[in-house]
Image (cartoon, rainbow, N blue to C red; front, side, top):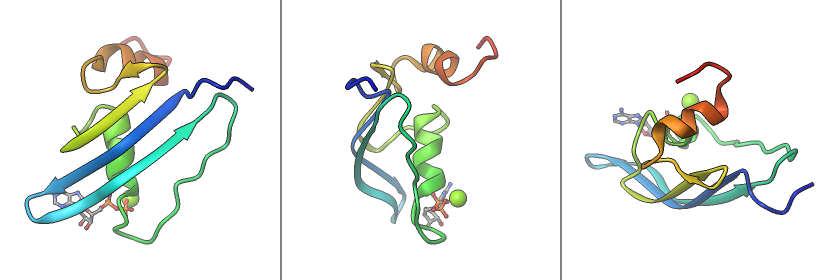
Length: 86
Ligand SMILES: Nc1ncnc2c1ncn2[C@@H]1O[C@H](COP(=O)(O)OP(=O)(O)O)[C@@H](O)[C@H]1O
Ligand SMILES: [Mg+2]
C-alpha cells in the first residue's frame, strides 16, 4: 500500500449562514485503504462528500484528491473519481 494519500482533507470548515455543517475535519485515505465516514443524521457526511467531489466549496481548509487541489482543479479532480470524461 502506497504511503501517499489519495485523499487529503485538512481542517475543512463549511458553514451555511449560521449553520456550521462541518467544523474542522481532517483525514487522509491511502490507495487501497477502506475508509468509512460515520456519524448521525446532520453530522456533515454529505457536505464533506460534496466538497470532495467539487459540488460545494469549503468555507476554509484544504482538500486534495490524488495530489490535486479540489477547489482549483475541478475538472481534473472530476476525471479522477469518475470514468466518464468531464
Ligand atoms: N444547503 C444547505 N443549507 C443549509 N444547511 C445545510 C445545507 N446542507 C446541509 N446543511 C446542514 O448542515 C448540517 C450537516 O448536513 P449533512 O452534511 O447533510 O449531514 P449528514 O449527511 O451527515 O446527515 C445539517 O445541520 C444540515 O441541516
Ligand atoms: Mg447525508
